[in-house]
Length: 216
Image 1: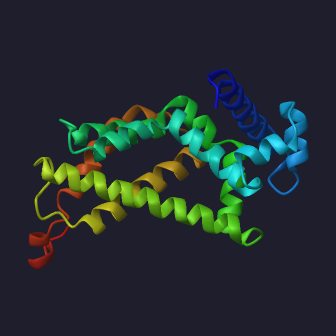
Image 2: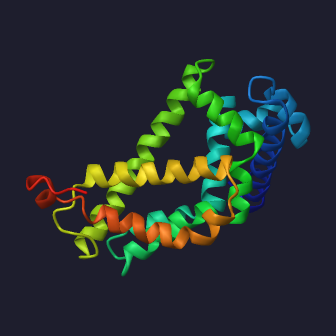
Image 3: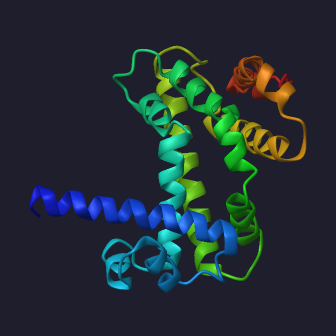
């Protein structure tokens, strides 16, 4: 594809995603059609289908785009990189993005409320399955990062990875929900401390602790 054509296609895709975010936030997923999105983006339905198989894939691409742009996914990917000098610091940076002001606003948006309803409901099994698959992939990335951190000697060599992943996911989900139901100042102001305490707890999830029944 010629460079100019590729640039135009990427601009169209960006416009489609921006329009989808606006309309999904305003109308919800079911009440927003691809025709609505095409009209708002100033393109044809064919242009949408060139980039996305269906409306479900469009929403998943939107969520992935927001994750990449706002939630520092590059830090999680760096934490997985065997060539990373300090993968633990990369993982902590990824977590710290949860309490960024802009991200707290997104977590409290109608778009995320819509996503929660889809994930917890049964109105769109296909989309719910896609979200569950994405969650599994994220957990696998976290596990890969933790294994890399262990290999660098930054976490105990006998760390129980599955338990550590679950512990970290509880921390992430807890932070997500607290940011939606309470005054976030305490959370934001103390989040670096909370991250350090989280990894202090994770260091205790070892085979030795499990054998001796001395897990906290």
